[in-house]
Structure formats: C-alpha cells, structure tokens
Image (cartoon, rainbow, N blue to C red; front, side, top):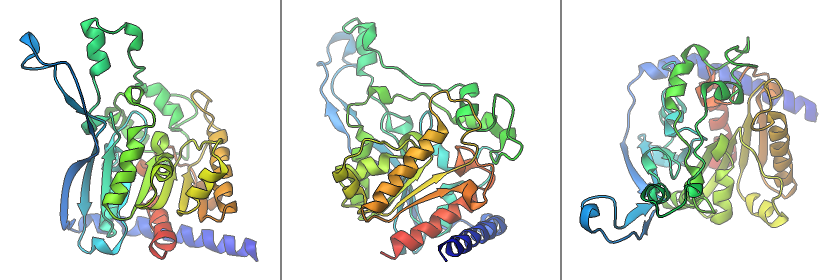
Length: 350
C-alpha cells in the first residue's frame, strides 16, 4: 500500500510538471500584473574608521556601513493570501540566478509572482548590490596590514563551473539528456561574480538578515541554493519566529548538528531537492553523491524528530537530466510547480 501511494504521488507530480510546462508560454504571453514592487536593505551596522583628514577628507576614511543585505521584491494582486518566498543565491552568483534564464526563458522569480506569490530576491551580504567591507583590502593597500590578511576571493572558472554545476562529465562535453541550456552557457558565465564571503565575520550576517527579513514579512518561506542552500536552516537556528518553510536546493547539509538543533529545525516544514548525474562528474570541490547522502540523512533526522521533512530526488521521481542550476534548466517551471505544490500542502495549510 505504501509503495502504491508513492507511485501515485510521483505520477501526480509528473502530471503537475507537464501541466506547468504546457501552460508556461500562455502565462508569459499574459501581462505581468504587480501590485507593488521595490527594494530595501535588511540589517547593517556602522564600522568606525579613522577620522578623515588631509587627502582622505573627501573620500576613503571615516565610518562605513557593512553587513547589510539588499532585497528586491514584487507582490502580485492578492499576494497577501500566500506566504512570501525569499530566494537566496549560491556561490559566485547574485540574485540574478532567479531572474530570466541564460537562454531567455522565464525564471523562478517571475513565475512565482505569476502564481500569486510575493517574491523577495536577496543578494547575500558581501555580494553584488549588498556591497562588501573593503577595510582589509584598503589597509593592505595603505601598508597598515600585512598581505597575508587579504581574503581568499573565489571566482569560479568556466571549466570548473561546467563540471561542478553538472552540465557534463568534462568541459565542454554535455550530458546527452542534460536539462541545462548549454547553448547559452556564456550568458551564465556573465552572471558569475567574485565570492567575497571570506571577508565576513562568523556567524555569516546573511543568516541573521534572512531571519530578520522573515520576521519583517511576518512569516516567510526561505529558499537557498548551493552555497546558501542550508542558510534557511542557519537562519532558523538564530531566530525561527518568522520562518514558515525551509527549502534547500542542492546544498551541503552539515552532519554535526546536535539533537537540540535538529529538534529546533523540526518545528518548520523542510523540503530538499536534488537533480541528476550526482555520480557522473569528477570530485573536485565536493562529492555530489556524498552531499546528497548527507542531506538525505538530515531529512531523516528531522523526520525522526517529529518534523515535516521531504527529500525530492528528481531522478527517483522520473525527472532526468537536471543540473545543479535547477532554476535555470529547461524544465525549470516544472520543478517550480513541484515546489509551489509542496508549499501549498506543507506550509499554506498549517
């Protein structure tokens, strides 16, 4: 009976995805109606600097604001009927991740809005429009700090991104069933920017700002991807009062969480999603198979603690060929429908 229920559930999910693909173009042809849109910053603190004197009086000395998080949002008419969805990008990227795909199709940000959801796209602290703290770099330049204090700035090359993002087994060979639009990969490379997280204090201020944003929104679903995939959980461990759902897309899940931490995270519905070809790329930075297994173990721990936790491993659902960049793959709207359906069933009905 349990096997039958699982089979029926997967079939329903597949049909839901096909419906999403069939109607996607119809939605895109319709006007996008927005009740309100805008942007703001969450958090930030003043960092004291030397008093501006002489040549630095006009620029380069004095106090600066650091550790703020930039957020842009769109709210559709009737958006107050649904929980806001906060989307946070991964390493070497910005919130552009969630916008138009590299080959020009509708991204998750727009699609979720068209499905009636308020959407908030955040740039991680130290990235893109959130800005970064240049103090250490400036101090080295001025000779007041040693060069050894410079941070390790990560910039993913085309070749490394190709295999880590699982577009193919080796650069530039693509998987025959791959869902990522490799013909437009140059547009993805343009999105990739230096990762300055090494400049950040511990704990990462992005976690704190995500928790604060969820409180500000009076209940939100937090979604992270890759580097930020476990950020929703980290935010919930700091302050989960405003968090109504935790969504992890293709991310390392820590294996050293305490029973108390698992118990805390079990209070909030959790969804984890992984794509395909986990064992078909070289192990460079991480093993995707071990990453998936660690997240699957995490889901099981949360479930054992009484939580509502689900792993969506797409190949087991009959959905093949997906890369690490699920939100940009050719079937990205089909996957979005799976997530939206999960939110409706596990978050909205609570």
